[in-house]
Length: 394
Ligand SMILES: NC(=O)C1=CN([C@@H]2O[C@H](COP(=O)(O)OP(=O)(O)OC[C@H]3O[C@@H](n4cnc5c(N)ncnc54)[C@H](OP(=O)(O)O)[C@@H]3O)[C@@H](O)[C@H]2O)C=CC1
Ligand SMILES: Nc1nc(=O)c2c([nH]1)NC[C@@H]1CN(c3ccc(C(=O)N[C@@H](CCC(=O)O)C(=O)O)cc3)C=[N+]21
Image (cartoon, helix red, strand yellow):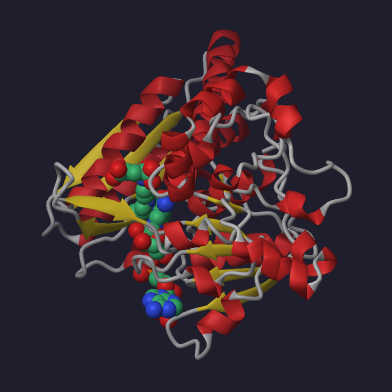
C-alpha cells in the first residue's frame, strides 16, 4: 500500500485520552485546553521549541509541565525517534527523563477507518466499472468466544466496504477432512477471492495440513508457507503479507516513522505475528533482534530498540524501564485482565505497560484501538488486491 503520511487525521488530543499527567492538567486548566483545540495560532504560540534544531522535539511533553504537543493536532506529524541517541548529551537525557514525557498515540482505529474508506471507494468504482465484487470466506471451527468476536468484526468490516462475505462455522469436534473439504470448495469458487481459517484450530487438527490447503492465490492471511518463504527471501515477493505485521508497518509508515537503519526488536516469534513482523522490518532495512521465551536478557535487548513490536500474549510484560527514551512502540498484544469496574468483568491490555511506556516512548499504540483494527483493515486490503489480481484489474 502506498505511503500516505499526511492524509491521516489524528485524534486531536491523544495525550488527553491516555496520559495520566495530562488528565491531571486537564482538570486544572480546561480553559487552556479549549484554546488549544480551537486555535492553531495559539498552538504555535505555545510551541516550546524551534522545529529545526532542538532535540527535545522528539518528545511530546505532557502539558502537566505546560508544554504542548509539537505540531498542530490534526496533522500526522512525523514521529522523531532516535534523536535521543544521536543528539542528546547524557545530562539532557536525564533532564528529559525528569519531566513526564507523554508519547504520541498511534491511533490505529482512526487509520483503519481511513483505510476502510479508501478500500470502500475503490470497490464501489470496481463494481460499477467491471461488475467484480471481492469475496472473502472465513472458516471458524469451535466455539471460542474471542474467535467468534473477531469473525463477527471481520464480517461487519466486509459489509462496510462492499466485500461479499462467506462464512462456515463448524463444531469443535469436526474432522480435519471436513475443514479441508470447505477449503477445497472455496478454492474452486470464482466468487471467493480470499480464504481465512480462523486460528487457533482445535488441538486435534493439523494446522499445517489445513493452511497448506488454502490456494496461495487466495491466501489473504499470508500464512501459506510459500508466501512466508517468499517474504523471507531477498528479491522475491509474496502474494500476500500477513495482516497483523502488515498493519504494524502501515502504522509506522503513516506516522512517518523512519525504519531504515533503525534498531528494531520484535518480542515474540509466532508464525502469525512475531516472525513475519521481523521479516517485514528487515525488508524495510531495519536491523532486527527477536526476543522469545528462551531469551536470557530480554530487558537488555529491548532497551536497545528504536522500534519495538511486542507480540507475546503476556499482559504488561514490557515495562517502562525496558524502553529506550524516544522509542516507538507497536503493541500487538490483546490480553483480557480482570476488571471488576468494567461491565464485562474484564478489560483488554497490551503486552507493554502502557502507563509506564507512554512516559518514555515517543509514540505508542493503545490497546484496544491500535493494531487490532489495522489487522482487519489489512485483511480487507489483501482481499481487494486478490480480486484485482484474479480478474486482471489495475
Ligand atoms: N492485534 C491483533 O491484531 C492481534 C493480536 N494478537 C495478540 O498478540 C499476542 C501474541 O499473539 P501470537 O503471536 O499469536 O501468540 P503466540 O502464543 O503464538 O506466540 C507468543 C510468542 O511470544 C513468546 N513469548 C511468550 N512468553 C514470553 C516471555 N515471557 N518472554 C519473551 N517471549 C515470550 C513466545 O516464545 P516461544 O516462541 O519461545 O514460545 C512466542 O514466540 C497475543 O496477545 C494475541 O492475542 C495476535 C494476533 C493479532
Ligand atoms: N487466521 C487468522 N487470522 C488472524 O488475523 C487472526 C486469527 N486467525 N486468530 C486470532 C488473531 C487475533 N486477531 C485479531 C484481529 C482483530 C482484533 C481487533 O480488532 N481488536 C480490537 C478489540 C476487539 C475487542 O474489543 O475484543 C482492538 O484491538 O481495538 C484483535 C485480534 C486476528 N487473528
